[in-house]
Image (cartoon, rainbow, N blue to C red; front, side, top):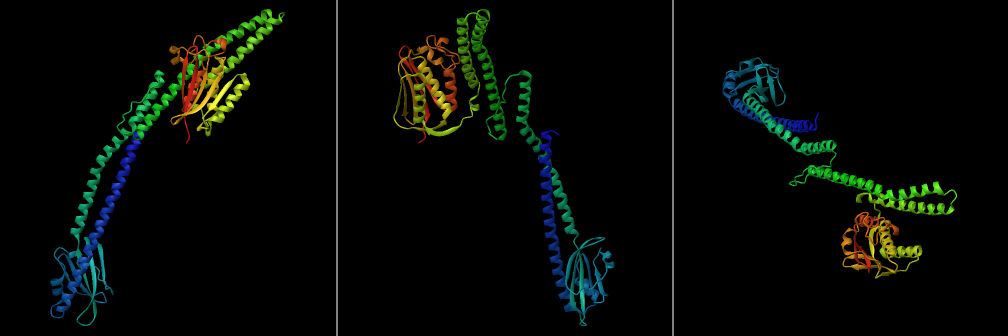
Length: 450
């Protein structure tokens, strides 16, 4: 069964059951009130009749008394303690009551009885008769009018329930269409994606941002992620094939050279091994950078913690001093605490410091200070700089400024692209200011924990 039909059936069924239960409650409540009212009225009539009969007993024959004080639509009897009848008066049209069984009761009794010819109130009241004996005044009174009213009520409730189910049935179908609309759209979009291979989205109306809107929005967000990952995968394949082609060609050429001339020429072997080793290292670094760039920002799996940025910079600067034997000046106004992924931030700083060392022979300055409500890390060099026209493009993958990003210096054109990705993943802002021939300053802005 389709989901729409299940929704339709469930909503209609539940409402029908509720409407049926409410109708039953209304009917039984009204019938109980009606029957109790009839019984109270019958008891009151019987009490009044008994009082009137006692005042006239002995003066008027019993049957005349009963006809005078008995009900207009029923029967009245005087029953002795041996269940014999002293007299019975029956109203017109109620001759069937003549054959009812007479029974003496010690206590007053009032109840609704069902006889073959209808429903009656029955009241039996003990009365002291003229000879001193205790007799029962027993009265039957028809309640056909009340029964007819209850029948009308039953028919009315049944009709109302049937009429009410019509809009319920229609609204259930409309509700199913409303709920199934976005699901159908999503299913249709998925089928179109399967056929065309394109990433498509569900058109959303922002009138009411309910759960159905959230479902469609989540689907569109998922499509955005899939498309982004697909594009990154395509970029990775294209970038890898483009960038790995040269080192693989170099390795193949030197390997062929060793095969041809390396057996009897140690110099050729040494030169070839050194070149192959150098290209292998560059391939390893390039592959790692490509794999990192292939990740989406939400896949970095950040481990956020609170730490002192000053301590992290001191550690990074000291590591570069020892590794490259270069003069690196570190300046910090004060300790600044922030929340970030320590290893990812260190990797970002390493990329900027590595670029500064690579393209500058003079000392490098690393600074930490505050700028308004933010912290700021700067890496400044006095190197060859970047032309103004090239600055907007330096964060593009594989982009190299002619003078600075050459293969001879070991650059792959991926460092700043990776730095940009890392800064976005960390929620930081990276920027470059540079003057050709005078140097470059890289800046990182981040939020401070106060």
